[in-house]
Image (cartoon, rainbow over the protein chains, first blue to last red):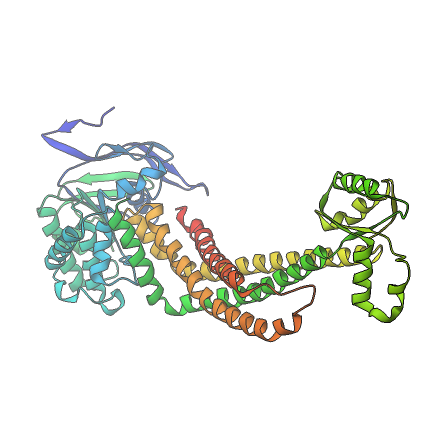
Length: 240
Length: 294
């Protein structure tokens, strides 16, 4: 019903309408969330643990389904999306996690290539694109190494390379710097900045006050399953 | 699915086999042990069955003809016997031929040759299903001009019931063994897949479809089945060809025989290979199924 609305000339990337999520154990993690995110935006999602931040993020890549309400990503309604079509959605979004989620038995090159293999891309294009993104994240020389031979920061770079290799329009990152030391975190943030500068929408849940307050972007604060604050260029706003 | 994706799945399954070499080895060993047991058992069972069939084939009904019957009556009787239900073959033997057989068996010095031939002409009848010999014999007994009908009464029933028992027990054991094998192997494969549960989860997050994830695992199961079948095939072939060479000379002129090397070895080896593949594929299919419901 509102799938091709446009605001200010930008296409809407993500919109949530009256999203409500209740888990079987009775916990209400989303209590009527309404939000719109435009293409090319960089959005921090902040809030205390257990406030519904994770659920908010998970619903965007259809790890969780809303109990009611609509979630549109790229004009796909996740609330009604059939399980069989979920892989197709996931190919349009890149996901980055705190624990990197790399395939331990595949080397760096293969881990990144995997995202292209699932869409049955031709080997020639796969080789080129994988080497390009590895170059971008600065790990071209470690392409043959396995995840356990890399530092945390390097693993996160691989994971970012994998998330951008099939040029998704949005990247969803769930505390990507949560396991990294401060210095490495800054490196990773600069990488996200660069990816965002190239036009990719980024939605990032984070607990890192310093980062949010220094690299200013839109901040969405979630508490008790509700968006309590949504400001462009806002602060982290919590004592961490 | 594109052809290169199929190729990718094949490469991926082999790569994974090599990178999980210990788990692959464990699964293949489980397959080997069971296939070896099943193989040896099937070998014994099929030969037992062959012996049973040979013995059964040898069971025949001897119909003695009344002395008073003339040629016309005898050929009438032959027609009658041929019309009895469940007959496979009827062979007529004149009383002179019967006498010759007797002399051949017991020697010429029985003094029978100088006398009037006291024997009766006979029909040798085989039932199409040896197990129905008794019924067929009873049907023939009702015909006119038969003097008596002999079929090893009492003895063959015992033989048949023994053979049937042996067959059923053997079949039951093979089934039980196969069932155990599948359970064992699907468990082993499940362990390898549980270890890779996280991998499956990650693959799904990157947008892999269920089949894209499943096929390499299933192919890996197939390789494990094939690898596990190598040793049993070799051992069964060696064992049986040696056994055959040793035992066969003693069975010359006996009523029963072992199964000849060809096609038996081809059959049993094909069976072992197919079972190995089936167990491997089925095991990984069932195990991976659980983790795909994310």
